[in-house]
Image 1 (cartoon, one colour):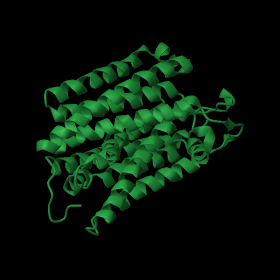
Image 2 (spheres, one colour):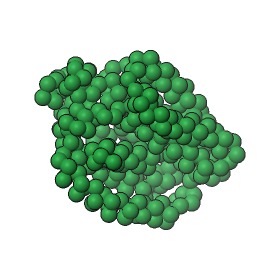
Image 3 (tube, one colour):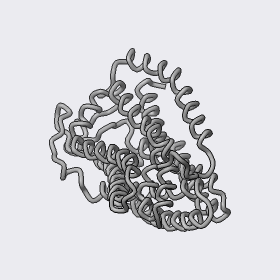
Image 4 (cartoon, helix red, strand yellow):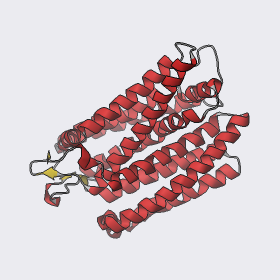
Length: 338
């Protein structure tokens, strides 16, 4: 495989890892205010407490890999999305601060304020990720020389906001399925009902977004016509989504979570297939777009990085697997709980 195509795929894997792992974190945060009392909210936070910071390492790794493999795309992306990225950084930091500060005092007003902050920051982060995906599909005003020629409001277009809403519903569904896996009793039954509602909302937005994409962005399926095997990702996505309600109905939370994770991975694969070989599409002139060819590092750099990734990725996957194995099972409150 061409090294540039290889690194495009590796970036997709890193993005999938982040979306799957931190996606349920954000989903739990979005659902946080649905808890009935302080005990339930502490359970929600403790379900992700040992995991959330490790999950965000995947995002940091994605950014570092993008910088090393495609520095031109990295520079243009941070120029174009500077304000959204700052808002995203603020949201991710505020989520962590909310979790750590919430338990410092027992005042209902104190804890309530941090609960609202935690949920709002989670919602904002999920929305911004989706808007970025929508803008990537539409294209953004990139001028000659790979310079961003627009403003913040140019990024808040109806289609981008629609994809943002889709992403919020997806992460909410993923979070509800995760809570169904980690809780028990009456809370689990209530969370399962949330998962059913979230699935209905997501499915509606998913079908609507798909129709809008096919109608307004016919180039999104250009690679599918040239490489028919890409339809396999569509099949995986459909089967994984269909298995979510089946697993919820059969009370198989682990299978529902794996299906949700597979559907997220398949959606990111479809996003990559629709985008390739572009990294950032110019809405002003297609010739000014950044691609894996004109935005990549040298072949030697890509080769060295590929060897490093080959050696390091097994350790990352092993560490992640061990952490999730150690903290498996239903969440309980203890002396050092949030």
